[in-house]
Amino acid sequence: MKQILIAIIFIPLFSSAQTTGCSTISMPDTISVCSGSTVTLPAMLTGTDSIVNILWTPATGLSGSSILNPALTGTTSGWYRLSVNSISSDNLVVNGSFTAGNTGFSTGYTYIATATSIPNEYGVGTNPDTYNPGWPSMGDHTTGTGNMLLVDGSTTAGTSFWCETIVVTSATNYVFSVWSASLWLPLPSIQITINGIVTDTFAPSSTVGTWVQYQFTWNSGDDTLANICLTDLDLAYVGNDFAIDDISLRRLCVARDSEYVLVGSNAGIISGADSVCVGQTVTLSETVAGGIWSTSSFTISDISSAGEVRGLSPGMDTVVYTVSSSCGIVSAIFPFFVRPYAECSTGINTVSNHNDDLKIYPDPANDKLNISSASGITLITITNLLGQNVFTHEYNTPSVSVQVDVFQLPPGVYFVKVNGSEFKRFLKE
Image (cartoon, rainbow, N blue to C red; front, side, top):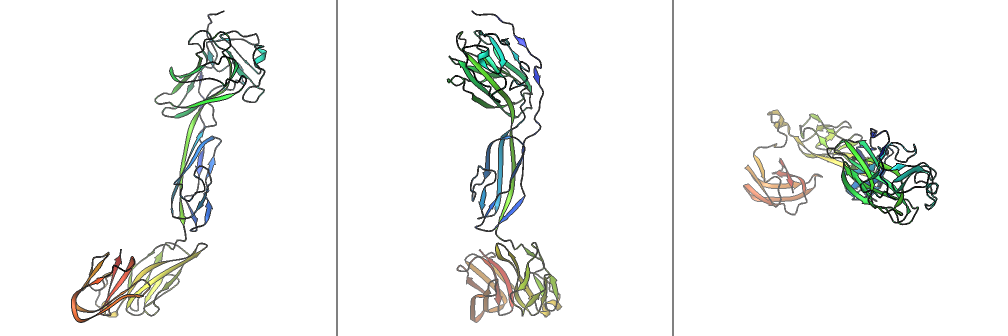
């Protein structure tokens, strides 16, 4: 028999619970790993959220991109970024597990305490068969011994069996979740609305007494309140009975952080003046501590453990800074010129152009290098940073301009020596 029922409203109508915050990621700004060696990326997630997914980018060299602490095999230095999506542990739904009994929500159904149910009635209890002998004996979803919402589906269209209005934050993603179990077939068709808008429809399992979860993500947009209602669309008088438990609305959290992975030893960068006069000193500096200073030619210059270079005789030299670590030995190099006393006594104090009469172009050079000198060129010598001769050519007749093929030289810094005394530095690409 169909009945016209009056909606019964339970207090409170509004849930004002708010999340206490999402989980956070902590990791060092930089970690070091030797080339070819393996290190675990040290990321820590603080909080009690339920993790939805983890993603490291890029995935290059990682044992897995979807785990919190993957192993990384060092190949190339670079940034690694971590993103963790999780669901907040704070449930904004009041009494979603019905632990407090018949309170915290509104309904258009009639409440019964223990009597045999008919359509449009519901109860809150620990076992369905105490309300209807045709219903199965089963425990709730939360603990197996607690309360659940027991619903005898309505025959009146548009009657919601559960509603709650919750305070939310605008422009925020939330995850709504509900557990359901069928008590008597046919199955209900349960519609979810938020602020009057239908979001979806779901049904319990066709296996009576089996709990199944339904959840979806909802963005609050401009809303600061979420009026959530559950309505059974199946108006069958016989059957259409079901249980509901563990209703929740939780914030969908996104935590991000990044760290720089430095692969291999680092010798740092040498800085300071790149020339000195014979008999004088300059002090160079380095960005990495703990290295050893040296020079390629002990006859042109020498250097102290503090980086002080002293000019011994005119010429081009190379300052070397060597760093030893567990990854091996690496060096930083710095081209250095010791100027003759005559240059210094006339006040010439250029750093890279030690003789304006000597010109080389283009710089950087790729294929051909043009060299010119108003005083005439009879001998060209090109050396690398190690002081090794890579090109030598004598000219029978002095020429103010010559062209040298440097195509075969490996990329790097080189020095042009003209007539045994004039120096210029250039870069080979």
